Amino acid sequence: MTIAKHQEVSAEPLLRVNGLKKHYTAAGKTGFRRSTVKAVDGVSFDLREGETYGLVGESGCGKSTLGKTILRLTEPTEGEAFYRGVDLFKQSRRSLQAYRRELQMVFQDPFSSLNPRQIVGQALEEPLVIHGIGGPKERTARAMDILRTVGLQQDHYYRLPHELSGGQRQRIGLARALILNPRIVICDEPVSALDVIIQSQMINLMRRLQTELKLTYLFIAHDIAVVRHISDRIGIMYLGRLVEEAPTDELFANPRHPYTQVLLSAVPVPNPEAAKRQRIVLEGDLPSPLDPPSGCAFHTRCPYATDRCAREVPIHREVSSGHMAACHLV
Image (tube, rainbow, N blue to C red; front, side, top):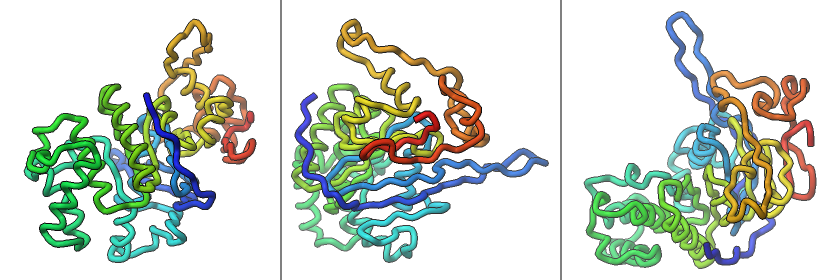
């Protein structure tokens, strides 16, 4: 997999998320009280201009909900999201629209996010219409130009979504996000449904466009091996919380949280005999967010758990320069 060098990253955060929570109320059976699902439970992190921040975790850990909540596609329960010093969660719907030009999203399933009755050109031009950008001819020219940017032909403008391959549809999803010239793109598992070769092509394309268009990515995925090839820093989520965060090379060289160690032990290597890496196998299933464990949420599956882990929630703190972890054993 050929990856372009990362562009220069600013030291100041372009986006700062503080204590973000997204809770849902689940209806109980007749005679039982309602339960609260803590999909995202107090997540804080910074996204610096020009970087790619990879967010990794099992299905159901809340990473996609986190991305959608930042953009207010679903409303937050609590917390702050400062974009260039402005709290997005305190903006009215009218004022939020101006910021949405600068924060866009690429969805996991491009087929379900595209209108099956719209040709590609209409789907690409719709954001321009909503934001009142250009006339009909200018919007068409812009759509044709963005198709070339993501590696497609002009005749794709006239096609319907079902006439495209999965890789082509994902390029359309990327093109639709880029057509407004955003500064931040939240990528919600953009390559998980693609085969390995197409994944490589998409990641190389995203890296090239990041440099050319000066983009900042929040890259959400469950495959830590894929995230390694595109991210400057990586955050590990487990059951709604960040358990570890570090620069990519540091995380792979020195994982501190037991859950991160489990994830890395499962990554395939080209020569297993030469690597001789110990495989850590988790016991049990991911706990239900309807009834999360007390203390550290990972203690029910952690091979190193103590009595303290079951009682106290670990603090997410710096364990070395730029390396954060939430574990009593660190």
